[in-house]
Length: 303
Image (tube, rainbow, N blue to C red; front, side):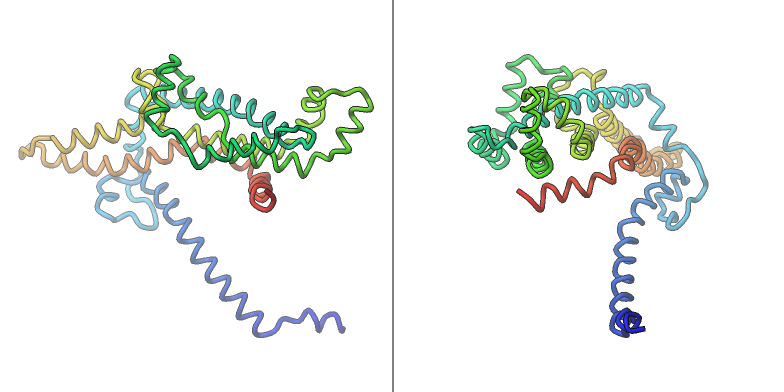
């Protein structure tokens, strides 16, 4: 009975919980509604979307926006290119970041502090766009996939997150015990450390994967052959082309209705493009979500 009295909720507790619930509900609606609006707009009639009639539910279900996007084969090709660039880029990122993070986490590595400092300086001081372009050009990487995946092979923030993980989760005693059994550094890393590092590997996979998938500016700078464009650059180009066509269309009486329809379709295509480019991330994220919070806390709580 006495423990029940201690657990009894007071009026203040109820008021506090109610206020917090209302605030969080409002914040949830503010975040969720734009996403919901994008989805229903991508399936609604273009004229209804442009006219602001689509608010809570789709009007005139149609796939015209998606049909316009996929009319050209360049979108499919860009989608496959993005998958390739993301797969190769993430593989290179993990192959560089994980060993570097582990090496810099080792206390018996005499240069771990100066090398870590060197990496951290690059987070605040960079050469800029033109020097980077000149390096890519002079190394023969222009108009190749490698121009998109090699310059960013190591993300310093991701390296620090990985270094912190190895420091706090791989005990020194484990390495000492492995050495007693004749295990060297390389074998220890591949056979013991990596199998114990599934969480940080998933986090780095997500960080790097989303970055590669959403990137378009590097391709805009380094890739001139359209057959090698990633999806994001293709979608950007489609929107710009549609805008130019609709803006320059002659305003004759016979074309007024068609122009209005095309302008409405242009607005609708924006939502279809968002959905298409977001599908891979939405598919992958649930599988690594349970590791996401842990990875963020590793990098933010401990340095």
